[in-house]
Structure formats: C-alpha cells, structure tokens
Amino acid sequence: GAMADVTAERVARDAAERERADLAAVLDVVPVGIGIARDPECRDVQVNPTFAAQLGIDAARNASKSAPDADALPFRVLDPASGAEIPAGALPLQRAARENVRVEGVELDIERHDGQVVRLLEYAVPLRDAAGASRGAVGAFVDVTERARLADAERA
Image (cartoon, rainbow, N blue to C red; front, side, top):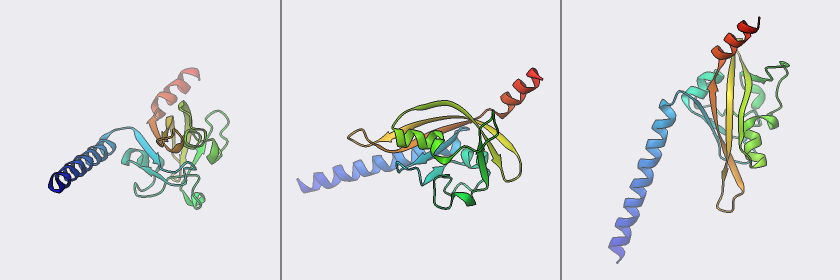
C-alpha cells in the first residue's frame, strides 16, 4: 500500500543520492579534465578540479567559452598548428552538443593567464534526452603537454 510506496521512493532516492555522490568522487579524483554542459549551446560548463587546474581557473567557475561573459575567462584556446584562437562554436564540447556527434582526439592549446601553454587531447560526447536530441555534452581533456614537447624536441 501507501507505506510500501513511501519506502520504495526513499530507497530509490537514497540509491540516486549514493550514485550522485559516487560520480562526484570519481570526477574529483580522476587525473583527466572533465567538463559537463547541461545545455545544447554549452553556455554553462561545470568542470572537475583537474580541468579547472588545466585551464587555470577556480573549479566553481563557469568555464564556457560560449557563456555571455566568456571574454572574462583567463585563458584562450588555440590551434596548435597556426596559433590562431579557436572560435567557441568550433570547440569539441560545443560541437558535440550542437551537432549531436562524438568528437574524438582533437589536440588544442590552452594559453593560460600566467602565460603557460597546456596541450590538451580532447574528447566529447553529447548528452541526449529520451528522444535522442542533444541536451548538452560531456568532455574529457587529457594533458599531453609533455608528450607534445618531446615530439617537438625530436623534430628539432
């Protein structure tokens, strides 16, 4: 009856809360940058501590280059080959969300406010609603700065 429904609801709520806490712990510990956009325009990108460190920002800050105040973000995203700044709409997370496609293995340079450049290997997948439409995206960002430096040194 009603009592069993309340208990089942509480069990489901507790399980969902445990799952959320487990995922938060994974995001906190994983040595890979993770960015999550919960809107198809990627106007709000939440980051884990690793991605925040890669970008040189506070983990609580919206990291989106598509946000209305994106110009205030203390980093630029550059094409490693040309050094040109990548427009927000062409970034892997934004493309995955907007085009509803997987984007894999894109290397981009992050030029931080302290002048340091970090090379990131980027992957992004869309988050989809029940109908299969994009409702955002998740990205993984691997720091390959050392590898890139070694490859450049070998070429030189």
